[in-house]
Amino acid sequence: MALSRRTVVTGIAGGSVLSAAGRAQAGTADDAVQNILSTAGAWRQTAAERDMLYRQAFNIARDRIDAVLRGRGQQHRGSRPLAVISDVDDTVLSSDTYWARLVSAGKQAFDDDMWDAWVRENGPTATPGAVEFTHYAQSKGVEVFYVSSRDQGPDTQELGIANLRHVGLAFADDAHVNMLRESSNKEPAQQAVAAGHDVIAYLGDNLNDFRRRYYVTSVAQRKALATEDAEHFGRDFILFPNNTDGHWIRAVFGESEPADTPAYRARMLQAAEGLVN
Ligand SMILES: [Mg+2]
Image 1 (cartoon, helix red, strand yellow):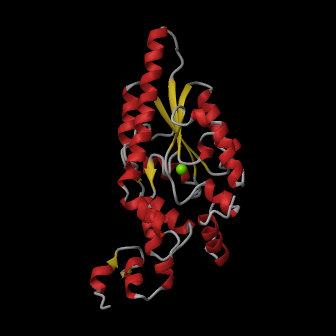
Image 2 (tube, helix red, strand yellow; image 1 turned 120 degrees about the vertical axis):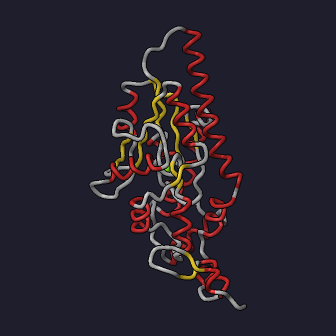
Image 3 (cartoon, rainbow, N blue to C red; image 1 turned 45 degrees about the horizontal axis):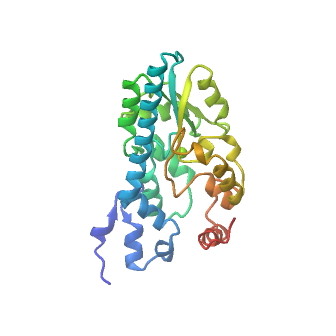
């Protein structure tokens, strides 16, 4: 099939190249046709349902604030300030454009260098409803604290705050942002917030954003532990969708960011067939 190069040129870093879709159309790269990230990426980019899962989660968070404030008003008590603790990536900041860039570059697994470059470019956009939610919380006197695991070197904290500010999220300052470079264990940082606030909700796309006890490497065990806490979800644990990364990947592969190897691709296919638990 004749292919106009002009129609498939993309603007990704490194100059003009054929997009992955262009390579697939041209039949020039089997990997582009078979990229195991393609369906997940397409869902991120196109599904209105996915956007509404974000809106739904932020609506639940708003309702949570309203209910707690109503309760406090009725009881005429409650003097500790209220707080929401939120994860950052794929909770209030979307990594859709990163995954699109990755697929365009023919990558099939998380790429640290591309991630770091994208963070430094202020690549993240706000997730649907995030900006409105943080300003709503602020208008009600509820502080939002951000606890994230990221590592772009010594300026990780500044870069994170810049990303949050870039999209207009409230509370994007040192007092409310904690970028953890050494560990993905968020509990000490969460407990530090809880020492001075009533934490009324946790927001995250990864079970680890709610409790560290979910940090286990078995698919079945993660499901069992989360199910034990099912009553929390949609109440004080407010969950957002992420179909490309997180500790569910770690449960499948033993690490959160596995390298793209034949074994990785085979394992992903096994997982899709229901053969990994
Ligand atoms: Mg996240």
